[in-house]
Amino acid sequence: MKNAAIVLCGGLGSRIYEITKKTPKSLIRVEKKPIIWFVVSELLNSKFEKIILPLGYRGNQIRNYIKKEFKNHLNRILLVETGRNTEIIERIYKVKKFLNNFDNFLLVNSDTIFDFNLKNFMSFHEKNKFNISLSGIKMRTSWGSIIKKKNSVSAYKFIKNERIESYKLKGFSKYESFRNTGISIFKVKVLDMIKKKNSLDFESYFFNKIDNIGSFIFDGFWYPIETYKDFYNLKNEKSLKKKVITIIKKINAKKL
Image (tube, rainbow, N blue to C red; front, side):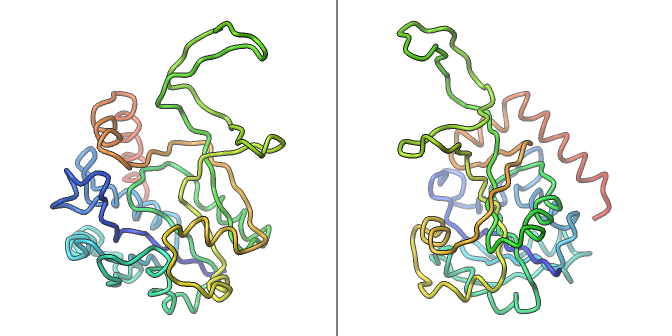
């Protein structure tokens, strides 16, 4: 099957505006590398045939960086202007015509550093013939947790930064839940099933309108930069810095 990828990189980054006022969030540097470097490098190494970047806020800065950093791979990268204040679902439809020769596309944010095997995710999607495949993560908490026995009022232990295997949501006690990674795979033909092209809550609208949706749970490093605190921790916490450096070495060891 022929697979493409769409890297969402046009947003304003308003929750971290103290930095994104002059620099798009995807170009924020971590260990001297822009976040988007991690994402595009992983997609190139995972052999996606076309990587599409719908540009928006400060798109020229992203365009200039991509053309310089990935100059030897521009035949696999497509930079498309989609407007400064365009919603996600509209951005996707604005690049839809470039997906005509592909069977599936992977959708990923440009503000997240991760260490996943995307080939396994694609194989899962194709093998099960899902219309859409979502991915979750076994994550570590960034907050303190109180451990206690059921039906007890006594605290057994207090811990921080431990891994959450899954969690329960109110009204879904028979199910297990996982944090959404923002990385998903779509059959291209799914875009023809949706008529409304302007929804502020893209995920809730889109994922609840389509049937035959799969769930793939990653067990690896995943770190989205959503707030200034996220950025600060990634730059200063030794364990996070060590992991990012390891990912950089891993990417550089592969032939792009």
